[in-house]
Amino acid sequence: MSVVVVGAGPTGLAAACALRAQGLTVRVLDKAGGPATTSRALGLQPRGGEVLGRLGALDDLPERSVGIGRVVVHVGGRRAGELRVGQPTRLVRRPGLIVSQAEVEARLRQRLRAHGVEVEWSTRVEGVEHHDGGVVLSTDTGAVDARWVVGCDGAHSSVRAAAGIGFPGVPLVEGFVLGDVRVELPLPRDAVGVWVRRAEMFSAFPLPGGVWRFMAPASGVTVEGVPQYLADAARRHAGIHVDAADRWVWTSVFRIHRRLAETYRRGRVLLAGDAAHVHSPFGGQGMNTGLGDAENLAWRLALVESGRAGDRLLDGYEVERRPVAVDVLASTSGLTGLVLGESALARVVRDRVLFPLLGLAPVQRRIWERASQLEIGYARSRFGRRPRVGDRVAEFAGHGEFRWTLVAPPGHPCAAVARDLLGDVREVHRTGGALLVRPDGHLAWRGEPGALRRDLEVMLDR
Image 1 (cartoon, rainbow, N blue to C red):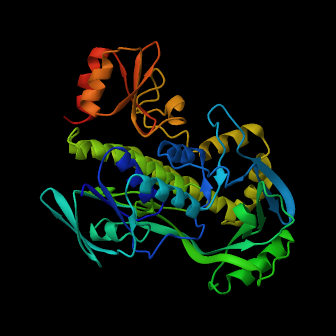
Image 2 (cartoon, rainbow, N blue to C red):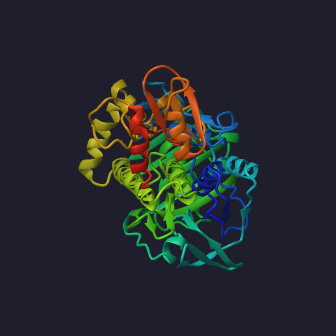
Image 3 (cartoon, rainbow, N blue to C red):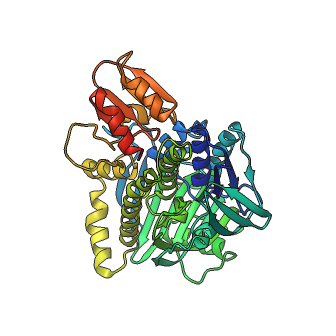
């Protein structure tokens, strides 16, 4: 077996789909008894939609989602600002989607099934041991041999623990509750509502199927007490009536942590998604960051396992993706502190300065473009002709497949070199200089035809 992916959440399923698209054999193990039915993460940002599109798993998710056009903020019961999101900009051409994580996972499992792979449920990983040329996983159903293991098994990753990789961090919020309830509310379904009052906060998100998600910080609340607590919070902050006996679909109590793995790789064990980094859900970045990890790792691992590249190509995975996680941890932690008003001074600045600024078009555009994750790039320098190596190539990132793409005039000598070194390469014919675009939509190379072989051999560690 080439690769065993542990964890059948969005990150693990996306990694498995991407690896299969690149021709590797894959097994997917998960300790759960079956697919999740609760929504958990619910924000699919434009970049996350791109990843699913490249993997052939976007399917009908846009039609089954809720389109959010604005975030309406209230202070002390009064409307204080409105952040418009989802508007087309120079960078962002597709909307963000509010859709259940369970729906995203279902589309990825469907795609994985088309690749001939089924998730192996009720399989708990208990240990990982390296041997020459591979890894043995100890599971509660027996030993599993693999050339590589990708741990996508969440914040409490057994793969990370078995590999001895530390996961340092700090708690941000000691208590937080959420609940999904099917109810009719006098609130617009194209908007997220946020209510703050001093250090208190309550928010309401519209979900598909007439469901609403309520969230609020809380301490000492049990799962059984969540419906009553959120019903009281909805009445106190938003003036809306929800009966604690209504049809609650799911409730949860959790703490918000900020943690980052000490390394993304130990030998033949690699980490992605929440197994590598966890952060505040504020801003809706978690699922999307994991999807980005998955495809970045997959094309590298496929080249290494096929013998086309040396081990050092995998080092680029952490080099590129760790800074993304660091930035997400910092931005979501800052947003959490801002919204929750961690001090009296912070609350004054929040209520009287920052929230009113949300109505300014340049502020709205900047926040939306940053949240979209389409600004993420891996260029090593700010200077040079664009697109630079590492930049996202919008023309192919938004409408591509998970394949290498050579953009060049017909009969260009780079085509034979690219196929020789990379295998399957799609050709797009157009005049001008040659571009080689990675499967994840970022530029791998541009230059003179005679330099491609030399430059690719350096990149591939051959």
